[in-house]
Image (cartoon, rainbow, N blue to C red; front, side, top):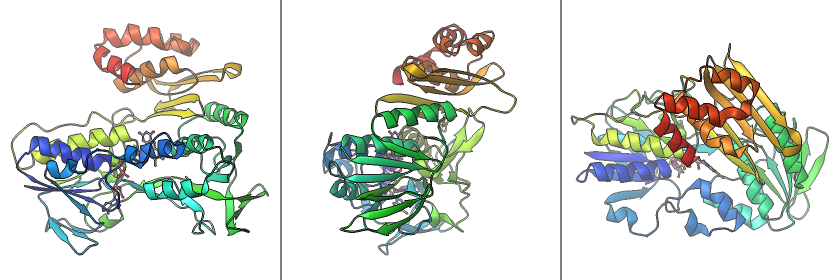
Length: 432
Ligand SMILES: Cc1cc2nc3c(=O)[nH]c(=O)nc-3n(C[C@H](O)[C@H](O)[C@H](O)COP(=O)(O)OP(=O)(O)OC[C@H]3O[C@@H](n4cnc5c(N)ncnc54)[C@H](O)[C@@H]3O)c2cc1C
């Protein structure tokens, strides 16, 4: 069997290693289009903060790691796929025939349709190459404008602040992290960040970027202001890197649609990570959940099944992709789990302690906690995850939580244990 993996990020690397363990004699080829040895994007903020060097971003240490595992590494971009002939074409002219294929190509930053986005000094913060360009311009005291205050935007903000730059954040939503947090939570994070010296404009768009004097940039905002800065960072979202799958017959929604075995609609072709659209048990829909733990788990499941393709054996199943986000924004911890916006016909409880920088928002469907947001209340993080992921029936405890949302820990102890969710939820509590 020849297993071909497209994309050498965390999903691709974990799949390759899992396949080697499961199928010692099979051929494995790992194709990645970046010039670097496989690395982790989520380490980039630590690189920008100066906590690690570039070698600290590498997924695996040791130059011979992949060759020792007999994983053939190819540096090229997949540009075409023939599902009938089971063949991938690469931009170096090479064609690879495969028995199974994993699409693990991740996602690419989306560039806002604004004049000036291609000017020098306008950067994404997605690759190691981007990080090097940011390091070159974001010296202490440099004036930096960041477009976008989503999950990744807030992580980048933290790294930029640590570099001592004068930072302005522009977010077109009415609050920070608008796709992860409700108004009270997003508003509280904004106030916190402003109190730490970062200028934040929400409900504001960047309208154009033009070249200023001495390599600076003039950024015109929809609120009438024009800011002169040394660097613009675009963090306005990403989208799955699946353009090469058009007209191939591989079914894609936002990402490559997969079943519970991470297989696409084409037998033998799998997807995992940021480019995959997998089934989420909690919301009952398919989602692209672009965080690294989900990429790792999806890759593991896909690889276990690829090793068994055309062979008898029990198939591995993905347990779900609960939407989990835990964010540290300049020291303020916030979380978002599952259906944090609530479901139709559901109930909602909310508690805000503004002077203490604390907020809790719980969403119920019947007697199950289906989603929640928290700011500043770190002691509940593990149990919130356990209750949402475990879909624990709360019975009478739901009314207690509607009255006092801080009763999450007693509710969890009383209900999760009684329903045999203990080990999974407790594990979640430890991991969170
Ligand atoms: C600044 C930053 C901070 C983050 N922080 C966190 C965090 O705190 N927690 C968290 O869980 N997640 C975080 N993430 C998200 C996390 O990095 C991603 O979820 C994770 O990288 C997904 O892994 P992946 O293997 O699916 O995709 P990727 O890591 O994107 O890897 C895909 C690889 O495939 C390559 N590729 C694309 N197209 C092709 C092609 N056609 N042919 C060959 N190769 C191709 C890409 O260049 C890339 O190297 C962060 C991301 C960034 C940018």
